[in-house]
Length: 189
Image (cartoon, rainbow, N blue to C red):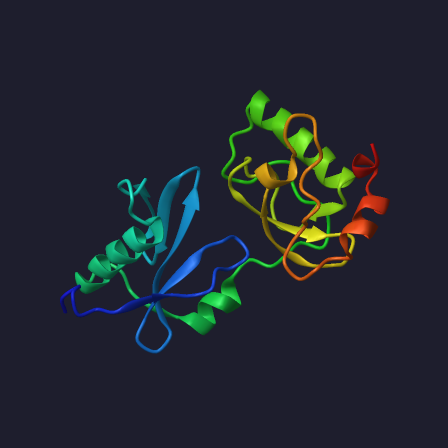
């Protein structure tokens, strides 16, 4: 089987922002995700870092092409999308650890995590899967104002130049800008 005839499609990401690369009738040949600008893939043979895509190229496309080559060469096996979804991580119902498992426990990361969690508390967000993943990595959060949950990035929540973050919280409308301003003291300054 040649990679030029192997058609892939990108599925909806799981709560860790891992995109399944799908062939045929819902057969997954691997998952692709971004971590600190690099693109990584997870296959039946483990995890592989593809590094950064070339300038102007999309990382997800680079990852899908790599997975198609690996599958065509017989180096990875496919699994059913239904099975992948059943095995996907689920939100925790209790406290999460301070740091994401991929984050080294350095003084800088620990300090950043404490700052991030204080900011989440102040702005009524809660981490429900992992600890602090770094500013520019996906973080699965729950909005404590309306119950929405999904992926956000700490860099979008921390505000700039002493200002609070944008009043926009997430897709789906939340509770409205006026109520957000009334409930969060940072917007009342």
